[in-house]
Image (cartoon, rainbow, N blue to C red):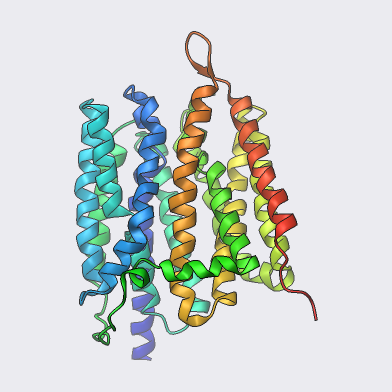
Length: 401
C-alpha cells in the first residue's frame, strides 16, 4: 500500500509539472500578438512568432546533443528553463520600453532557442517515470492543456492583462514554479553510457529514409503542409477578435483547449472504431470548417471556429504521433518523432508564419490599414482545403485483410 501511495504521489507531481509548464507557455504565447499591437509593433507579429519555428529547426540537434551528455533531463530542463525565464522577461520589458524592433526580435529569438526544446524534455522526463506509458501518458499530458487553458483565463478574466507586458512577466513566474517542481521528483538511477553517435544520427537525419515509404512520407508532408495555414490561428485570431471589439480575446482562445482536452480523452476510443485515414481527414476537415466560419466575420462564428480548433489539432497531429508509434520500428520511433517535430514546428510553422504574415499585409486596405478579414481567412480556408484533397488522394493506408 505504501508503494502504491508513493506512485500516486509521483504521478501528481508529474501532472503538476505538466500543468505548470503549460501555464509558463500559455501565459504569454497567445497574448503576444495583442501586446505587440498595443505598443505599436503590430508589423512584428509574424516575425516574433517565426522565432519559435527557427528555433525548432535546430532543436533536434540541440536535444540530441544534450541527450548525449551525462546530465539528467531535470538538470538540462533547469538550465534551459532558467534561460527561457530570463529572456522572456527581457523580451516583454523591451516591448514595454519600446526598444528597437530589431532588438525585440533578437530577444524573442534568444528566448525561443532556450524555450523550444523544453517541452520535449519535460515529456521525456515524465515518460521515463511511467510503468505503462501507453496507458498513463495521455491523462498526464492532459494537464499541460489544462495549464494552458488556466493561464489564458487568468490573464484575460482575472488580471485583465490581454494587452499588457504583465502576461510575459506572469509567464516568468510560472517558469520559476516549473523549475522548482523538478526538485520534488524522485531521482532516477543513472542511465547506461550511450554509445558514440555520428553527427547524422545526433541530428536525426538518418530518419529521412522514412520519407521514401509512401504513407510515412505522405503523413510527414501533410503535417508540414497543414502547419502552414495553422500558423495563422493564434496570432491573427486574437487580432480579429480585437477588431470585433471582444474585451477578453485571450479567454476566448481557451475554447480550443476545451475540445482539445475532450478529444484527447476519447481519442483512443475513436481510433479503435475508425480507420486511421478517416481520422486524419476528419481533423483536416475541421480545419477547413474552422476558417470557413471565420470568413463570416461574425463574433459568434469566430467562437465556434475556435472551438473546432481542438478537434483539428488532436485528430490530425496527435493521431500523427500515434501513427508513428504504431507503424515505425521501435528503434526508429524517437528519431521519427523528432523528424515530425521538425516538419511541423520547424519547416511548416516557419513557412506558415512568414506566408501568413505576407498574406495579412496584402489584406490590409483603406486609409487606416484595416484588415479585410473575410478575404484573409478565405485564402487560408482554400489552402487547408487543398491539403485535404492532397491527403485524400495520396494516402493509401493498410488494406483490410
